[in-house]
Amino acid sequence: MLINLLEYHWAEHIDDALMLLSRTDMKTLPLAGGTFLLGQKDDSIQAVVDLRDLELAYISEDARGIHIGAMTTLQAMVDAAVLQNLASGLLSRAALASSFSRLVRNSATLGGTLGAGVHSQADLLTALAVLDAEVVLRSASQTQINLSGGTLERPGLALSGVTYKGKQERRVPYDPSNFERRPNELILEVIIPRTAPACGASLMRIGRTPSDVALLNAAAFVEVSNGLYQRVRLALGGVNMQPVRVRAVEKRIEGQPVVNAGEWVQFIAPILQAGMADFNPPSDFRASNGYRRVSGLNLAFRALEEAINISRQPAVSL
Image (cartoon, rainbow, N blue to C red; front, top):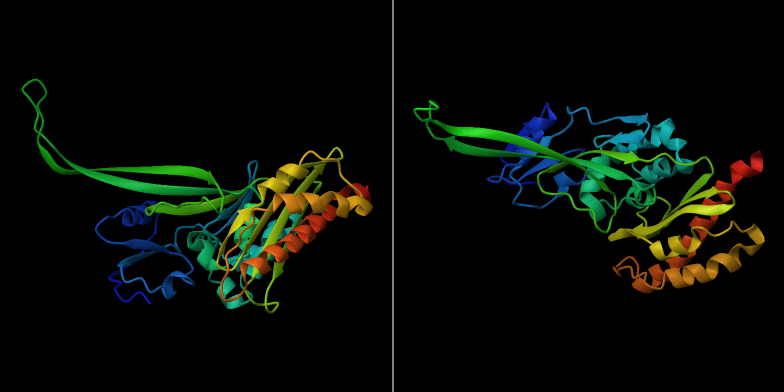
């Protein structure tokens, strides 16, 4: 619990929230769904800014792709038809797997999940890693200066405590191993680029029970064009570990001719063995490094196989 909380702010405008978060004299954090933040034992947190009225809960489409507001709940992502039809429903299924409690999914938000990172224990992070998602962040700053009086040529009054306000917005590719949000930044939305018609995606996971957190998960995304694997993405994640992109495997598959089912094992086995040689997941009380390494190879195989089979279905149906 936040036992030293002194201030609770209900922001009605993004600029108001950013000004509060930019304060240096009091540690202030954004409050989204609260499923993670309110359970923290951080005695240094003195203020929170409630983001519910900032109109950041939306899912929309334009020429750039699909925009998902930071305050969109995981349950809204599960139910959204546009996400169910995007990349084999990868984001919708990952949002569902991130928590099998509907109560939690109705509170937990996309922005809060990204902000919590590995601590969210969310399968959603692994799914975002393979969709080339972009995160839009905005920060604010204020500078206070004293203006001196004018001269005979340019008369003017001296003013003290003049405040200059500024803000900065940036779009960064979502890379779980290198995603860093500055202390005064607010996550506004996530942009998912449009996918080609001939694409497939898969999410595989291992848990002690079907509704438990994933000891290990794997997400794969594959686009096929002109008989070639044009775009391949593979990521592995799980509880207490950052999702990692297996770029060595991706590069070895991209540009290769599509193989039939009978040749699949001979094609992919050496690629996975070589590309995942550096996969070094952590050990904890749930699973050892060795278990996750062996299971990761199997999950990657199954996820890629399913994604590739799905990507070929439109061509088969024509």
